[in-house]
Length: 67
Image 1 (cartoon, rainbow, N blue to C red):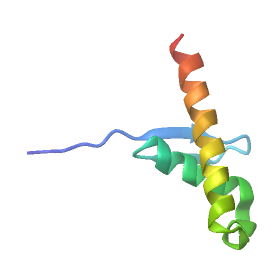
Image 2 (image 1 turned 45 degrees about the horizontal axis):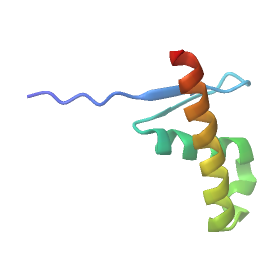
Image 3 (image 1 turned 120 degrees about the vertical axis):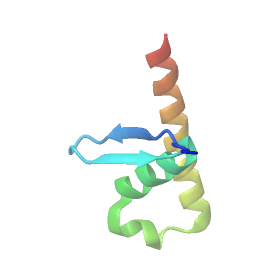
Image 4 (image 1 turned 90 degrees about the vertical axis):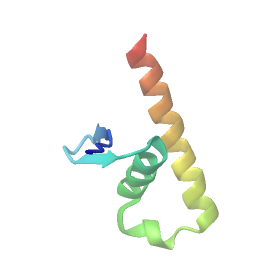
């Protein structure tokens, strides 16, 4: 038996490609990439807000792409 997980991918403006198995994982990676080294300095609440904003942007892009 072979189980293959689909991956979601986003390419950032600087050409970096991020991949996640779920939209939440991808949103987390995107938010972290956008903040760079300062990500670890953000509070958990601020990180959550940034991940949510990235997830909203991914969902909006997916809706626009499917129309």
